[in-house]
Image (cartoon, rainbow, N blue to C red; front, side, top):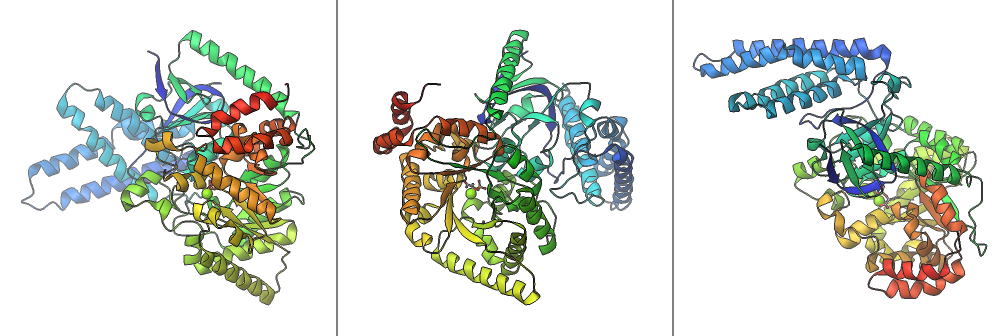
Length: 594
Ligand code: PEP
Ligand code: MG
């Protein structure tokens, strides 16, 4: 039977494919594809874990005190029996060899299958045995952790032929309760053509990474991972935020038609790649790329970006256990991006760890729950960097050194206090001094601030005295202005980029930077949202930074815009109770014929 699940659309287009469920587990589970040559090793790891757990359970049974209730020994026997049952380890091996999942992922996928079978059992006693399977799997996962390959964000890319090994030609879509941004990054070069999560909001970092992958996605679909089963056919409507499970032939035909239409539109937009972004009245507009890893830099150039406006360096720091990337590793990553950009500017943001981008794998929700705090208001971004001065200087040195290979700019996230500005420049001066002492070369580097806390927007003039440029992070500016957690689907409907207070802060920042002759850019998701292009141009913005996949669409908007006409409507749009509606009406009069 066909069902529909509703969520928040975060990345446009239509995806049709078979569901791959990524199960959530109480144990930290890495999900990544393995190469064909690693299948045997992975199966060995699984066997090793099974043997180790068998020994563990045997020892537990042996050590039971004489007075222990006899049910305890019986329970350990049940666990041992489950451990050796073919439906657990045997079936898990099949996930490894046929789907090329790593052992932990394979095991949690099989747990999902078994859990469903238990849920459907009529007999209450048997139903409750699900908890036993979960406990055994948890032991196995813990044991596997001891032999983990230590996968960081640069997990092996899935081998190209995996797609064809997967049940024929069927495209695959990812369905999960939540995917940590770093986990999603592991899938970046993979075969998924769309994804759905139960939790998250439009500008949660998971959604942002999805957008950078340029695949249709819906987040905050609440029950999706419970309702959708492994291998179900599903349609993801990334425009409307709808997921259709087991679609009827008519619905499927309609969506296939829409899919073809958007492919044609994309091909048309691709032709704009080398066209300079200039408005009808001759205003040149800079379209820059947001990237997460150095490997994304080449794609930015292909998409027609004239530089990188935001390199989110924190993705280099995630999911590495206790280790941090050292100066050399960071330097090489930054240098690679700089070289790939062939002389165009690369804006490297210092690490923005915290909130929904925790250092360790696991969902933001879990962290929030564990901490019982709101990490978005905690030790995040520059606050964290300043609390770890050695780590901060190390990153600054690595960025400075990369500037010997091209044009580099440093961007400081989440500044709110002038004290943070002073400490940042002191750290930079020390980093430069250390490089001088070591005789290491570096170039001239401009330093900019992210304006993403209302406090910074309100006293922008003071920040502009210190920084060479500013870049507005609208994702956080909206979050902090409206007191809406950007990752929380429960309040996603209140996350409103059109809120007059948000627009006022944005306009003020752009206007003051222009008045003081300082370059200003927007690098939040608003920059890549075509609904805002005209408004931002009217506010005086001439630099937009976005996911490479959005550049062609925004360029088309720029080419059709006349800023003189737009500016005439700005005051009334900003003063309106519903600025979105006011802009739509104003644009009806000024939009150039298509
Ligand atoms: C923003 O806040 O708008 C931004 C670009 O930074 P991030 O999304 O990484 O927090
Ligand atoms: Mg931000």
